Image (cartoon, rainbow, N blue to C red; front, side, top):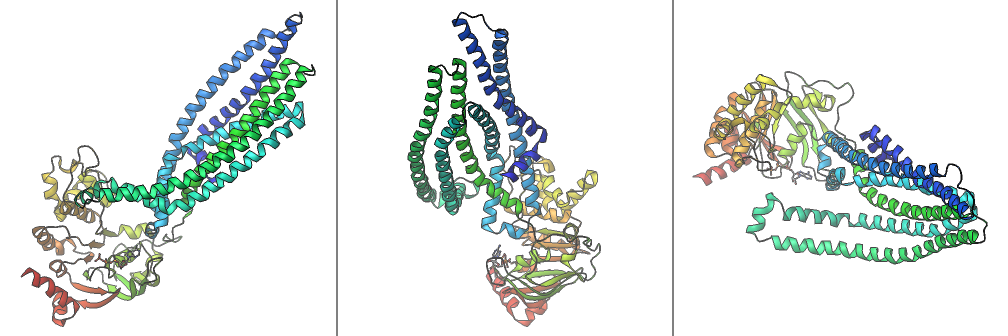
Length: 587
Ligand SMILES: Nc1ncnc2c1ncn2[C@@H]1O[C@H](COP(=O)(O)OP(=O)(O)OP(=O)(O)O)[C@@H](O)[C@H]1O
């Protein structure tokens, strides 16, 4: 809990401070009211014995009224501060999560356990605010219980011992079941992940088409039902045991409370304490007993919620490995030598198979290189290594003779324009979709660059057809949005790469979704568009590949052929075989 409380404190010091102060005040008011009512009752008892009303009697009555008013006001203000705190906490947490997520390595995202944590952390940012309120309530209950206990102790230390002795078993029982609940939740995590996945699958736009046409909805719903029934049964069984044990223990607690109460009544009946003192003590015993019990249940609910917050804290504690060194070098403004891979090997965590294997490769500055190979041969992985989204497991990659790891990461990325196969479709305006390619650019210069990039990537034709041109909201998520076809989205994404003033352009399957004419047009311009830049192109379409100065054939993470189109064709190797296969199917 302390790290969570630290986050709460950081999200709004003034609100938290005010909240604590008011909760302390709220805790003291009931004790003070009880003390005042003792004085009032004793005053009335005096009258019944034909003695005059004590001095200040009506002042005490007024004080009780004042305390009641103050109590009401305090409660309402606490409610107001709680809602402020909830907003601030979830905003602060969301910002921290976004900032942290941006700093993390891409590899972290590919680890399902980590990804799960991130997902839950995101939900918790808004979901777990109940815990923060419960913590405030706990503080109030502790102060109140301590106040009541002090009162009872002042009257009779043994009475307090009796009360606490009867409550401790309940506390131990609650802790025991809270722990069982915790470990059950932990064991259920993998199944819960599957359940969450099925729920999303069963009700998402992306899966709706296939689910309908393959008639899968019923199948997945049944799977969901089976899994969630299992969880339900486990939880019910634990809940039942908790109920029986809790009931038995509360019997003990109630007996303790009534034991103490009877003792106080007996003392009043025998005249050793005044009726006012009896009311005061009876109130204190009831207050202490109910507050101590509430402390346990509040604490148990906090522990329950804290279980989920451990994911959040685990997420915050992940440290990225791919970072800039202190005093890292800026990336070269004009790349001279290009990229060199020296004995580079790479395997994904959790899988010892080498996806890239002892690779030696030179991508000269200004060269246009195409990377071909069958599915799963490591082409995209190679791009991720060149852009330092991953670091090689062995070997090193040099840019102009300097290890990529010695460059400042941001500066390195600013020199690279890359569009991946699974590029992002930003559900924003068409302009924003292109402008994010160089987010720091503003004003008229940005507008000029956006239009130029759209023209180069053929996105201009798509945008001209949109009712609101560059201002058109794209995608279906928001009102007034227009969805684009796969190829149209790809043209817009490509414009993003041109928007960036990068020296190294990487296009992973840039024409995969383009029609034949667009592909032809695009590659007619490819030479001029990549003028003065180093370009790396990944494609399965040989009509695209042949435009490159140099073609690399990747197989099992190694370069097995290297040369221009004509030479590789003449050599009659793998490239030639793949090319002929594709060409034959077109004839
Ligand atoms: N995150 C990952 N974790 C584990 N293995 C991965 C991961 N990403 C890719 N791989 C594996 O690495 C190999 C190379 O993948 P990569 O995406 O680099 O291939 P590719 O040549 O780009 O394929 P394609 O032509 O299908 O796009 C594949 O066998 C794949 O299973």
